[in-house]
Length: 114
Image (cartoon, rainbow, N blue to C red; front, side, top):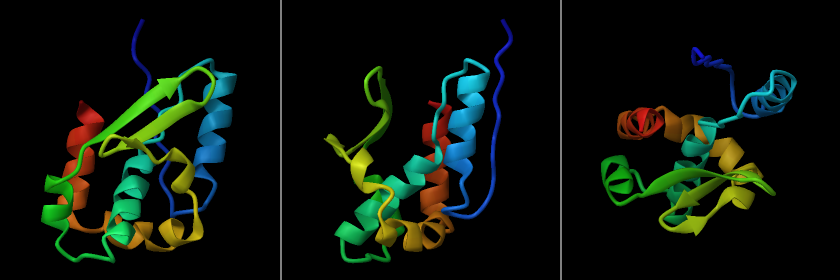
């Protein structure tokens, strides 16, 4: 069977995840929220008191997207499940800024491919 990928673009908090989950369910596909990678890196950025050394931030980061039947996608940041923290207001307000930084984008692209 040929692989099908569907991508949704738009600003933070626009409802992309809600739509993607619904589409995946209707098409019996697996939903992978790659935007959660940017949110996880933003969460770490905030925990590090808004460090501007983004190269160091990503160099010292391990990030995995896993799937659990009872919970769905989980985001493991530096060996900690941070899934429940990624939709808070602070993360939402800063994710576009963090995602615009080249080291963050490179890190996320590399992780999407693995």
